[in-house]
Length: 79
Image 1 (tube, one colour):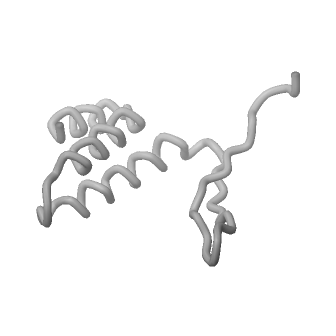
Image 2 (image 1 turned 90 degrees about the vertical axis):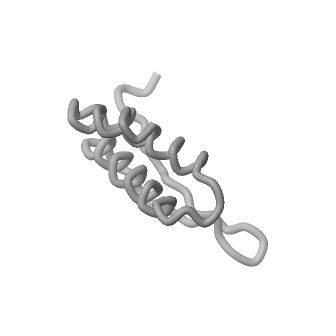
């Protein structure tokens, strides 16, 4: 799966690359040392894919803590 991710990066298809890395990370078993690296590659390519968009990192209150979330604004005219 990482081969597909690397090919997508080379072709600047960052969203595809991100989710190939994410899939590779999900299907990596146990304490495999590259699991964290694969997740980091997912995050890096995810944000490259959305570099032109405004993404706000927010915390949503939940019970005694917070859930991390991303807030994306709608683009275009209001319908």
